[in-house]
Amino acid sequence: MSNCVLTPALKKTAVVVSAEDVWKSYDDETIQVLNGVDFEARAGQTVALCGPSGCGKSTLLHLLGGLDHPTRGRVTVNGKPVGDGQGSLHLLRHEVGFVFQLHNLIADLTLEENCLIPTVAAGTSRSVALERLRQLTERTGLTHRLKHRIQKLSGGERQRTALCRALMNRPRILLADEPTGSLDERTSRQIFDLLLELVATEGITLIMATHDHGLAQKCDRLVEMRDGRICESSLT
Ligand SMILES: Nc1ncnc2c1ncn2[C@@H]1O[C@H](COP(=O)(O)OP(=O)(O)OP(=O)(O)O)[C@@H](O)[C@H]1O
Image (cartoon, rainbow, N blue to C red; front, side, top):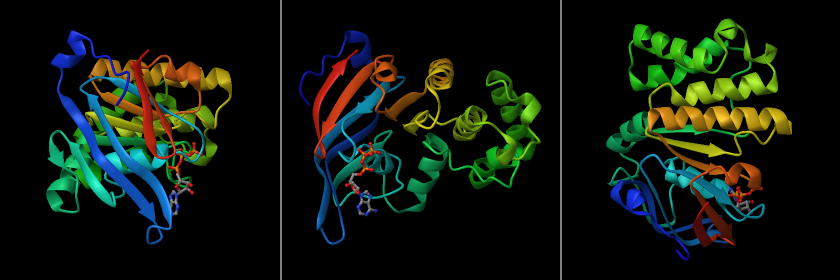
């Protein structure tokens, strides 16, 4: 990685997620997407992944979160390799949260039901999960919407719901793929500021793909991708 200047404070903190010489292709290597990516993020850092459409940002996020596997190379979360096994699944359920551009919520279910889904998968008791949801909806201004179906919510409310859902299992890493990409500029800024506040309060590492350089500048680090490679990484 070029131009990556780490301050003493950042050097002290542990690497929580890394990709080592990661390659990814589809369709029997006819589509080559990632070409030897080396990347790491440290505890509590906020990292913006930028670069032109199709350069591989979402693909990299999916590999970091174990939603897909590299063709070659290694991804680790908290020093443990991300693979197919049960240990890996457990790690990802508890350590990683995702927020997607189009939120991926279930429209026919209520806000509460959507947010409880990951806690069921993680084996959290209902009372603990409901208390966590109460705290998160209070902080995101959604308390009055708990029993409402997603289809009744505005775009901004849906994105805030997606943020709550991603944080339900108290992940240490939050992967966000253009989390405010479908919103108007003002709502986008508001939700991004809320996201930054939540990750700072909980000491979460944020890795976010974005086309919005204004949002990227608010992160600790800006990583530029081009043609499936990282071409620059700098502190903002
Ligand atoms: N499952 C798949 N099968 C085949 N090709 C894929 C698959 N997933 C992604 N690609 C291709 O990989 C390339 C990189 O896609 P990716 O979504 O990672 O880019 P991106 O940088 O996130 O783009 P954008 O900014 O437009 O969201 C694209 O050419 C895309 O068509």
